[in-house]
Amino acid sequence: LKTKRRKLAVSLVIIGLIITSLSSYLKLYYVDYPKYSLDFWGWQFGARDIVSYFVNNQSKYDNFVMAPEFNGPEIFLKFYGKDMCKKCQIGLPEDDQILSSRTLYAIPPNYLVTNPKYKIQTRKTIYYPNRQPAFYIGTVTYNKNGME
Figure 1 (cartoon, rainbow, N blue to C red):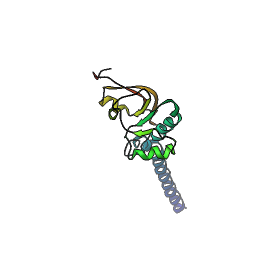
Figure 2 (cartoon, rainbow, N blue to C red):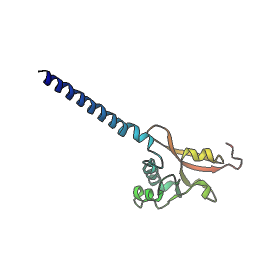
Figure 3 (spheres, rainbow, N blue to C red):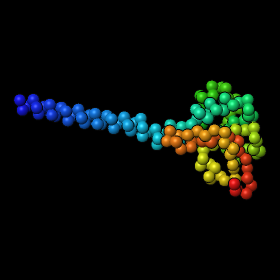
Figure 4 (cartoon, rainbow, N blue to C red):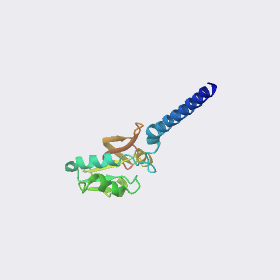
């Protein structure tokens, strides 16, 4: 009788450890990992939403420029745009000789911090799952003084 109780107790402890370990793993994989793997080295979050916005607003703008924040950003234009985004390109406001109100940019917030001479009229903000801004989509203006 003692042997059966001992086996039952050991079995319950092992099952408890397996359930605890599995639940911890699932939380890390589905809750925590997506939050810290969004950037360049992770899931490269935001490209799908940017290209979708570009495609849906093609009639309103002459050009669409997505910041090269991704590993191989051109592939996202082709994959998500499916040849529907002919006016889409990769670049930054500093690459353009003349900033136009008919050009829509998708740039990360840190670009505006490191380049205060550019200001964006935001049309849409793409957020990471942790609710931090990932990209601003809008028209860009140049301020010679670098002040807002």
